Length: 273
Image 1 (cartoon, rainbow, N blue to C red):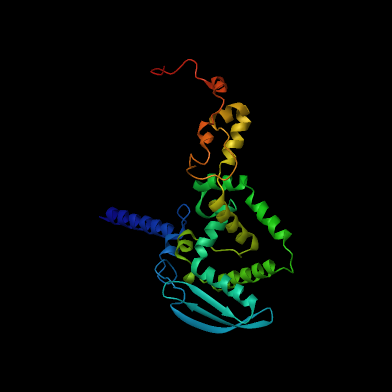
Image 2 (cartoon, rainbow, N blue to C red):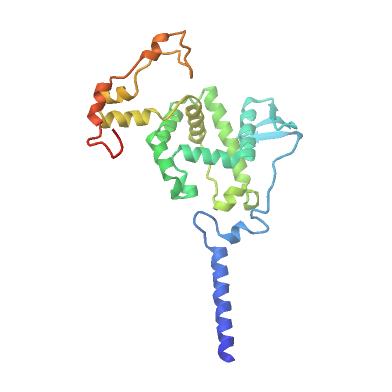
């Protein structure tokens, strides 16, 4: 009987230790369960942004003051008005962070090739890809090239101040839910982060990754072979479907197929003739 009591006591202690470990130790890229499920600051608590309507006040930044009015429409649009231009950009940064902080950081960290620092090594291929594009260096060069007396610099400066003003107000209770789950605390926003998102959106809308595989192909194969697979087409205008009546000869363009014998399979696989 005494032995049975000791066994139960031992199992209880082991179970208690396991529970303490589970709620105290991070699980993979997740924060400790005790932190995630905390009823006061965990995922159960969500502080929404301001609702529909207009809100007014006075902003004071670096010794300058401005009146500001923010109106949120029923369809979700945010309108900002002020008697000072700098205040509009400051408030835009603050509100963008308030509504989209998690999205901002994920986009910036991904484009900077640093997303794995948040979500773990599973996204290392993405980080490697964007580092090949040299996004961190490009954004740094853009910021360094800005004229500090220009309108663009002023707008970015106050926008960045606004984002960081919101970040400085964040308590564990007010963190975005995904940050709570990952145990991530956002660092200060920078101008480079803003340009990183600009680079991502510009590239997504007007660019492709074709230059990378083409460059690798040209390094690995003679140009004639690459051109045989990808014949040159006439210069712009180009369209997804090029009307044949505009230029009938475009559909007669072919690569030089004779170079393909350099990479012919010899012997051929079974069943292929």
